[in-house]
Length: 134
Image (cartoon, rainbow, N blue to C red; front, side):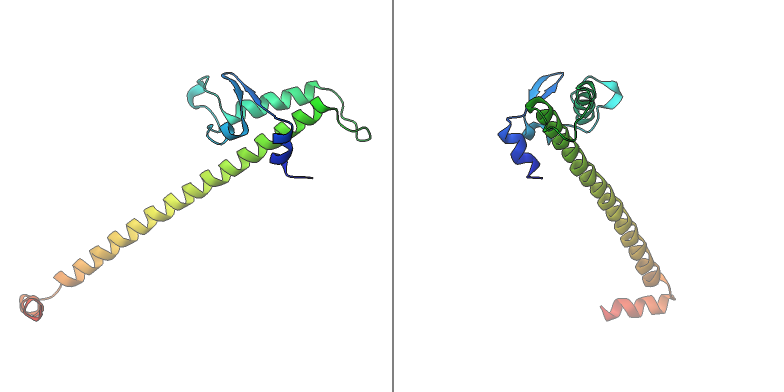
């Protein structure tokens, strides 16, 4: 299988949406879904529309080569699925990174608290000795 984006660009594929035709570049900035059922264009809406069109096109032949409309639909669907999978992976990686950063912040706070506790523990004479050593 050749590069899906090369095939899509050679076929000059555009993606139908409720706001008009979109290019491949437009797909990368769309949300995966719309929040609250708003009518905002999203990748899930586009993928479901393409899937319905493919199903409505009828039976697939494994012997005859696909006609141009069938190929266009197939390539468009593969492009949208690829964009969705990449964006979902990036979203999941961002969530993991945010969790890692939050955990790091908590550990640093606990470390600072432990160091403060160590610094303030001891008798008045020991604390004066520590101060004098500075």
